[in-house]
Length: 206
Image 1 (cartoon, rainbow, N blue to C red):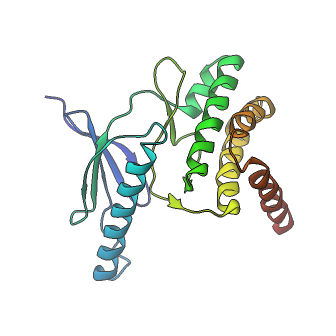
Image 2: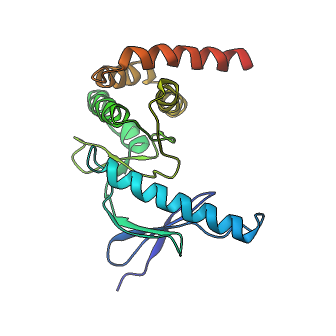
């Protein structure tokens, strides 16, 4: 039997691929917090992430949630096999890369039109299964519900920053394709207008 192995190790959680091809995400104890407060925070975040993933999976491609164990601060979900978007964009030809960015833009618009903000929308939290025709969203640990256009604009900004940092040689064409896909959002103009304001504040701070 293949042993379980850690496939993700972040500041908040440990993600493990299990022998049965499921994935476990566990929020470990944070020793710098008072235990009772830490336990409550981890329970609330586990519950919130599980609920958001369940809702998101009805709208876009996302892992299937099998169980939410608040007591042990643990989520068990399906494993999505494929490449991280960051790797796919590096290894693919420009046409395929533009195509998948267009698809991603459309899928992000579906989340935002349902008032789900991913919160960590980087090319490392998007999986492209074999074939490169669709995308799966993973890691909803920072996700939340919001009708606020600025929250959605920050999501777009995070992806834009990740794209520019890792794929600067193709940035213009890839981001343009993403925006073409995202333009299917009913609030496209309002979000993009707010994005300009978010980025203007960022430039001012620097």
